[in-house]
Length: 157
Image (cartoon, rainbow, N blue to C red; front, side, top):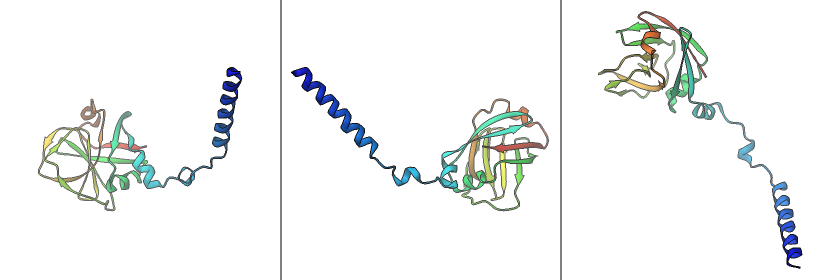
């Protein structure tokens, strides 16, 4: 008799559990489409290709970084400057939040003067102000890959 009651109880629980799950409707949130801005905030990893070598980068979650992400995929010729950075000037300004960073690290990806994207390949101290966009994760060989002159750089998700 105990086995019969126990089996009936288990079957009843299984029945009610399956009925409850079958009657649930999706919530509004699960059926909404994700906006491009929300997707940019979620998808912050990009790849940067220089002379056939791929570098992974993480892009910050900021208004400036999202504006940069909207430009991707992007292939540009970056100019050499000061033996420690490559830069490209856009025809338009990006939203910016310049700050005196003090120290630049190899792999920093910054916005300068609202329209210059700058990729640093050496560590150094600076008195200039920049808006941070992100950072290359695997900086080994970055300086040698960028070389001494201008270089074509491809940014993509």
